[in-house]
Length: 191
Image (cartoon, rainbow, N blue to C red; front, top):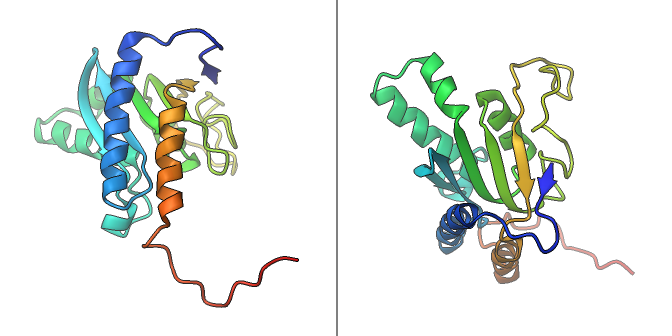
C-alpha cells in the first residue's frame, strides 16, 4: 500500500475526487449512517457515487463501495454491455473512498479488477488494504481462507484528506448511534 509522503502534495484531481467522496460521507452522516462515501472515476470523469446505507437498507453489505459498484453494474446492464466489456471498464476505473475499504469491500474490488483505490483514513479494525489484510495485492488468486477467486489486485494509496474523514467519523460516534442495538444487560464498569 502506498501513501503520500509527509509534505508531498497529492495530485489536484485526486483531491477533487476525494472532496466529492467526503460530500457523500456527509450525506451518510445526515442519514445517521457511518459516514463513509466514495466516487468511482473513469477517464477522469465521475461515473458513480456511493455512501454507506447499511441502516437504511437493513443490509450489512451496503457499504459505500458496494453501492457505487451496483449503480455501475445496473447502468451497464441496461446498456447491454457484455461481461467482458464490464471487466475491461472496471480495469480502467479508480475509486476514491473516505475510509480504507473493509475486508469485504477490498476483496470485491480485487475480484472486479479495479485499477486503483485512493482512501482517506485507515480502518484499523476491518481494513482490507493493509491495516488488517492486504487484499489489494495480487496473491495468486488465493483468499486468506484458502479459497480461490480471480483476484487481480489493485494499486492502493491512503492518507488523502484523512483528517476530514476522521472528523466525520468522530462526529458520528460522538453523537451516538441511535440505530445501535440496546444492550441486553447492564454494562458493568471495569475497576
